[in-house]
Image (cartoon, rainbow, N blue to C red; front, side, top):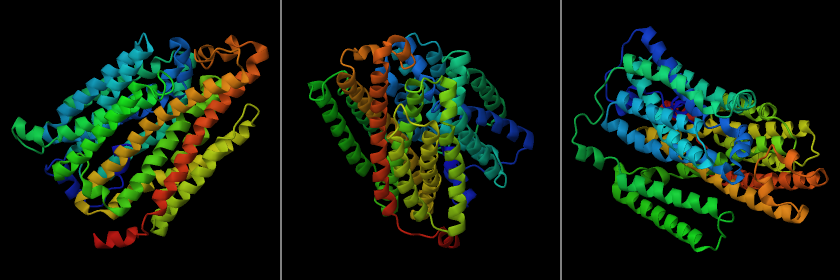
Length: 530
């Protein structure tokens, strides 16, 4: 979920939001520049959101070219992790420097990363480009919110924020399909080249139409600005998470789980994350994640729900298209079409869930229902096999998206009811941060499970087949595997994917711990109080 989505659900006290963001007077501009600025921001949000889903149907073709199935998890997690880890860092930078300059800097970094991905000669270069793009995307995601606040009058702001939210929702649907079309009819590299012209248009619009406002911290000294950024906490969080991701990625594939390298990475990760927690206590209000937010019962509950819910969904987004292409033999385009029930269901159910909460006045029952229904849908998807009916797989997707969708939008209502008004923005930021971080971690966990189970399944079902032959590419199975062994290999591949789905099933089930722990608070009573 992006900042543009969560902003639409902020408490109705826009003057406080504006002052907390920039401290500027209420903007009064003509409508034409506002419209052009919003179009430019929509293009940038489209690119950032697209980068999170477009590769789902292109990955099989990428593995064919680079012959490196083991790096599938990093194609998604490298972008998501850097994007997530730097969002709060960018927020601190926006406080110390002008919005316009920070946004253009982030946009330039994102475009450079996209170009590097497009021309990547190797899998490692692609991962590096994805990481660079994720760094820039963190700035775009936060900056779009600040620019709207600075340039759009208060009475019109919800409409323009709605535009950004709609763009993000549309990319959830079109991302995998567009990735499949570009991959089949041009090249997977166009999944990244497409960002370049849209980024150029955005840069021109922002450069000439957005005013250069004074930053919130004014003309504070560089020393004061650095102190306010919680650099020790940010560095510890980033380094600790990188060590954890590397351990999960390499464990069982590059090195044995009991290898000294893996043990060192886990130890290093634990030490850094523990040190991060200490720094957060010491930093107080300047902490990256203020502890008063997490000590709140409802915030702790919805954070647990968000971790497991976000982690489960990303596994299906990435591995369901692979199942359709590898096991069913579909093209990238058709696999994108086959996953439309998931994408469309998410958009529809997210909107419907918000309407239901508005009518009933309580979010807790819908979050509990989200956990139960998504667990059922995930469990059914984990039963897929090579002879499964396609209609069944689509029905299972609808059930999964119904569960995930009921909670995805409603989860951001919890911080608005659970914490004090001055903490709402940072509470929502914390929730979206942990959701995105869990997506990065779960992708690596999923990749580790998939690789290890594929090797084991091939050893049992097709011992004469070298696993490295299968790992060269998903779409090449029918060309490289002897016909008499193809059924066994497809069965092994299918089981490896569905066993990866088991990770998502467990995550969905554990999300019930968070949703069931939420207190039943009425949003209507909160509205009256405010």
